[in-house]
Length: 340
Ligand code: PHE
Image 1 (cartoon, rainbow, N blue to C red):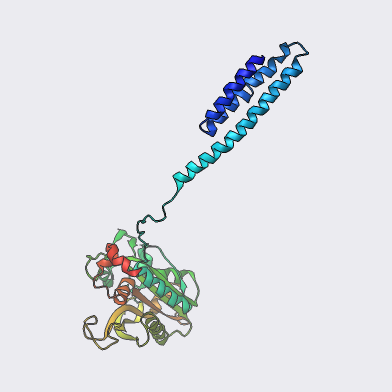
Image 2 (image 1 turned 90 degrees about the horizontal axis):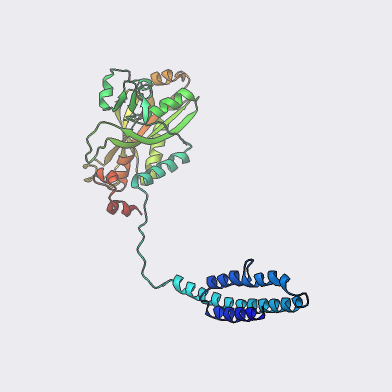
C-alpha cells in the first residue's frame, strides 16, 4: 500500500505539472480525489489492514491528499491566469478600426407635416379622432347628404367592397360617426388615409391622406371657420399667410367654399408655383349642412357647425416644394434622407 501511494504521488505530481488547462486539472481531481478516485479507494480498503497499521496509513493518505490539493491549487492559479490572458487576447477590440456608417432613418415628410397639423389643431383645443378606412356607404355618403344615385357621388370615384361598403373616399365619414354618437360641443380633427379610383400622376394617387376638421356648438359661424383656418395657415407657413374663400359646393356643407392659402413661395406676389395668381388651393370647407345635422341627430335649430378637409400630400408638397406626388410614395432614400 505504501508503494502504491508513492506511485500515485509520483504520477499525479507529474500530471499536475503537465496539465494544460483547468479542465485537465478537474479531470485529475476526479480520478484521484473524487468519490470513486484512487485515494478514496485506498482509504476505503484500509479495513483490510491490521488495526495498528491503520492510523499510520491513514495519516499518509491524508498527507498525500493535502499535498496534491496544495499543488493543484497552485497549478490552478497559474492556469486560470493563463486562460484569462488568452480570453482577453481573443476578445480585444481594435478601437482604431474604421466602422461601417450606419444609415439613420428619417420621418416621412407627410408624417412631419401631419405631426405639425395635429400640434396646431390640438393647440386650438381640437381632439384627434380616427375612423375606419373600410367604411359603410351609410357614413361615407348617405349621412353626408349623398343618397344613392346622387350625381355628386360621381365626383368621388369610389372603390366599392360591396353595395354597402366602400374604401372611404374622404375623412368626412368620421364626422358623421362622431355626430351620431356625441352631443355638442364637438371639436375634432380626423386624420387618415383615403381612397379614390385615380390614375397615379404628379398630383394624384389612388391612396392619399386627409385631415378632417369639425366644430359644432351654439352660435358657430362662418367667421369661426375663417378664423380657425387663418390661424392654421399662419402656424403652418408663417406670418403674412392668409386664406381666401371661393364659393363652391359640397352636399354636406352649406354654404361651401374652396379655400386658398397665400402662396408661401412668393408670399402672394405671383410665381411659377401659384401660376402667377398668388394663391394656392388647399382645402374644402363650409358650414355643416342643417340636413346633415338633422340626419345625425343634432338639432339644427339649436346648433350650427363648420367642417373642413385638408389634403395632407398637397400641403406637404407645397411646404417642401416637392414637384411630383410620386416622390411621396416611391420611398427613394435619396429623397427621404433630405428630411433627416
Ligand atoms: N370631404 C371633402 C373632400 O374630400 C372635403 C370637405 C370636408 C369639404 C369638409 C367640406 C367640408 O373633398
